[in-house]
Amino acid sequence: MHIVHIASECTPVAKVGGLGDVVYGLTGELARRGHTVEIILPRYDCMRHDRIANFHVAYQDLWVPWNGGAIRCTVWYGDVDGRQCFFIDPHSDEHFFDRGSYYGYWDDPMRMAFFSKAALEFLVKTGKRPEVLHCHDWQTALVPVLLYELYQEALPHQRACLTIHNFKHQGTTDIHLLHAAGLGRPEYFLRADKLRDDHSHHAINLMKGGIVYANFVTTVSPHHAWEARHTEMGFGMGHALYVQQDKFKGILNGLDYDYWNPRTDSHIPHHYDRDSLKTKDKNRKALRQRLWLREAKKPIVAYVGRLDSQKGVHLIRHGLFYALANEAQFVLLGSSPEMGINDYFWHLKQELNDNPDCHLEIGFDEDLAHLIYAGADIAIVPSNFEPCGLTQLISLRYGTVPVVRAVGGLQDTVFDRDHSPKEVEKRNGFVFEHSDHAGLESALSRALRLWHGDPAAFRELQLQGMAWDYSWNRPTEEYLQIYAFIRHQ
Ligand code: ADP
Image (cartoon, rainbow, N blue to C red):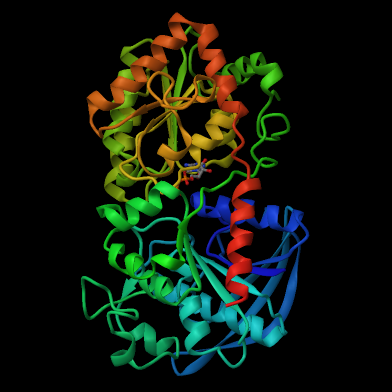
């Protein structure tokens, strides 16, 4: 099958969070199974060009109709760890992707709508006719809309699958976007069964458009599929998902087991696997050296991730102080696009600067993230909501015991050592229910007690976590079933 992913991120060239990892992992596994897979991305000025091989111009003058005129684009080709990627590089005064950051601009919906349209134009002009277009999140949710409303003639047999990684961000904007993208007809698109935002009736909602128009919609874990339909975690999409329920499903994300592999990971100094778990101690030592932590008979508790209200910032903070007060060290790697949260953690970092048991690294650092997964003993993921979550999966793979809140994909992947209904030998971490201090403590205290009081049992739990198969194997099978289903519609 020929599949094209149209996405705003792909690890390691353009990664902000899990979306990039998913595009990277799923496309890798699809290609391994013999499918023809291509990825279309924006060419951001800030992306990691050093991670792209054989970078060259693939298409010189792609004219993309836009705003009553047209914008000329260059399309670049590059190889990203064996993946065939095309990068859209528009030449216009808006400098859509030359802004120093991936997201965070007032015209983000316009930037991404342009990218969505350019991706389709690229397919049309180059004669590429994939069976399936797979788009991701609100950023490329306009693809199915454009495909159906404007590209029927040029791309009549192409089908679209939309994966929603995060319902919180939906791409809500005004009707100018309809005109710019060539869709026009606000009276037609501003209807409840089309793109109209359910809360703000003069606004269009790109995610909703994607849900309505895509041939299939997925989110990234079965439990979150339920939450999105039935709770406030759908951020207003519950009704649209109810209407489209026959084409909506939760598929648990996988992890790229080549990229995230403690036996071969080039980012970590000491390689190990289940049979040589002891070697993890050397990575703990290396982590301490890198972050100026003292050597001590204490476990390292870690948090890696975006510092967003979604992630339970108040509990990350509480976990930090609880760990320090209970014979543990704490490391944090994260950053936030929100100034207030970033400033808060900068202050915390200054306050704790002289503490030899604690290190806060504010920023994005792929290399350090790997060392933390390899060197830490316990990872906390106290999210308010978590569609899937990859940090707990990476932690399990690296023998780092996850302490998570029972929500979304965390609930589907982490099973409490003491209370889970799962067989004892399948339990792999610690889980708590309530998003408050007592909740977090109820799980973190048990993890710390086990580390100090029964090292053999702690080691057993690490090994049980490492034994789980959260690779792309099974999820890819499920996506292929969906592709096969929509192809014949
Ligand atoms: P989300 O997609 O909501 O950000 P996920 O848990 O699905 O969260 O994915 C997070 C991914 O981003 C993981 O691979 C994690 O290691 C990585 N990551 C998040 N923040 C950072 C950071 N500051 N530095 C390095 N990697 C990070």
